[in-house]
Structure formats: structure tokens, C-alpha cells
Length: 149
Image (cartoon, rainbow, N blue to C red; front, side, top):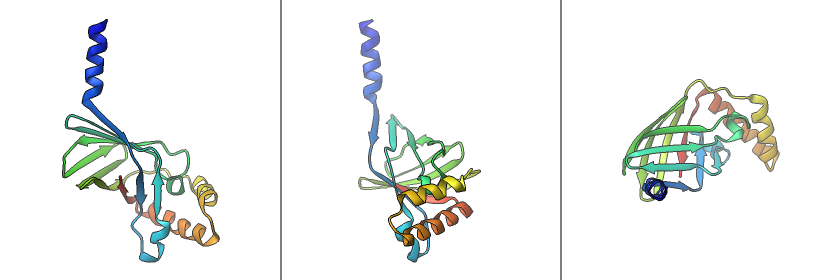
């Protein structure tokens, strides 16, 4: 039993997991940039050897509150790496302590009603509501963004 506990301790110690602050941004025209950045709560990055798994929740203002977690995996590189998931892929670059991943989604099921509710709830002004709605519309037509952590 002690050997099993020691073995499990060694296995878990060899994996590196972190929770950091992250942001998701949608590429838009300069006049909409202030509405195109969303904080991602509790993203999880697990690096074990050369493997990496990234798990995070997309902003409800883009996809709706019920959208499942995005889970991507691949081979970790100290300067760049690619990740693949069920309905997304990412090209990631590491600069200093910051990682930026260009995300591309396929076959997204966006709940427009939930997106609207999330925007109404989080926005602090009518101007912000309109700006976030425009960003959500751009994202729906071209589901691409940058995840930075």
C-alpha cells in the first residue's frame, strides 16, 4: 500500500498544472476592440512531460452559458506548439512568460438567446451592449480568436 501511495505521489508530482488569468479576444476593427476582450475564469493548463492539455470555458457573451468546456491537447514546445480538440484547433506561441494561442473553431453551436442574456448581464452601458453584440455577430460568422494566458 505504501508503494502504491509513493508511486501515485511521484506520478502527480511529475505533472505540472496551473491555473492562471487568461483572456479571449476576437479580432475586430479598432472601434470594437474594447468590447472584444473577455476574461476567462480558471483556465487549466496541464503539462506532463511533453504533453499539454488546455481546458477552459468560452465567454458566455460569445457562445452562451451552456457551452461545454473547450479541451485541447498536443505536444508542448517551449517556443510554439499546436493543440487539437473536438471542435477546435490552436496554434500557440510562447513569448517570455506569456502564451498566445490563435483559436479556430468548427461546428459551433451558439445559443443566440443565451449570448444576448450574458451580454445584458455583464455590460455596464448601452454602448457596451451594442459593442459586445457586434463582436458576437462577428465571432459567429468567423469563429476565430486569441486565447492569452
